[in-house]
Amino acid sequence: MQTGLIIDCEPSGLRRSAAGPVRPGSVRAAGRRPGAAGRGRILEGAGRGRRGAAKGDRVTDQAESSVLLFGCGKVGVRLGERLAASGRRVVAVRRRVEALPPSFTGIALDYRRPFTAALPHVDSVVVTLTPDRSEADAPDLVSPLRRLAAALPARPRRVILVSSTGVFAGDPRTRPLTEADEPRPASGRAQALLDSENEARRRFGAVVLRPAGIYGPGREHLIRQVARGVPIDRNRRTNRIHETDLVRTLHELLRTPSPPSTLHAVDGRPATRGEVADHIARLLHVPPPPALDTEPSGHVLSGARLASFLGALRYPDYRSGYAEIVAAGDAGRWV
Image (tube, rainbow, N blue to C red; front, side, top):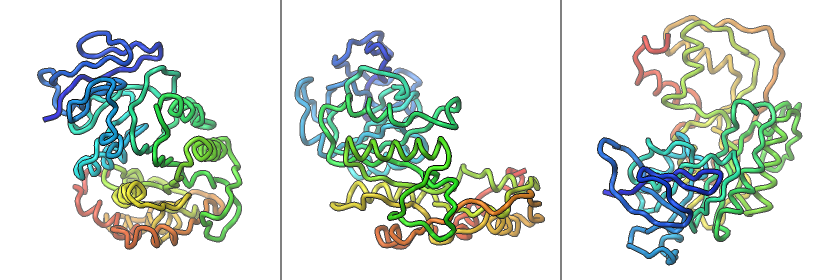
């Protein structure tokens, strides 16, 4: 069992742990507190590694097999579990680390605020930046990347930025957009996404992954709308990717020697929201939801490069993905 203290990296540079204040760069190894099931292992700057390395010994064997998840939500946790199962050391940075799997090293840190904590030497970094609700229209996604670059002791071998197909929001082109198409930001949020992509490429030579709408178990908003008969924008063109296939894509991007510089994480079946909702309604045995009075909108992304890179998706279209979600759920839970 891996043990340790959970570190809270304060903006001032003072780190507080379960055992009290800890100065930056110091090392403290300890077991879990009683009742603290599910907590991650602790890393403090140049902390001890699995092989008992001393403080100043940032060993290359750890760096070569370690991945930093800078921002670690549901997708990050699933990716980290897959990496840990294959023997990789997983370090996760997020505001609350108490619920991280025990195989993770957790660093409690708010990347939206300035911090002085030093991050460990790692081989790879996966960056997933979630905008704060207060800045949803024009989030600052560049400053966290600058803080990341300043906190790392060396440039990692590979950095993956998880961006979004939202970089194309408002794009008037109706043909399927490929990775070769330059985004034309039409909103503050789309511009912020593009700015973060450019910053990540400039600082790290990052691979940019653009997922479409992520769905899967626990991501059931549209199912609930259909079950409740909520009016929807039926004319909106949509793309999606199942969470399982997104995690597979990230894992392969970390493994492959020559990843594509940009990749759209979309399945091979773009559809209007109405088409998807009608399919869900049939699965639930309820009437299709009514339509909002809207003009056609949205865009279509090509998934050809992903299919070539990853091979067959486990969920190649919304039909297979939603059928499994609905079959696994209790009919009453959607209402």
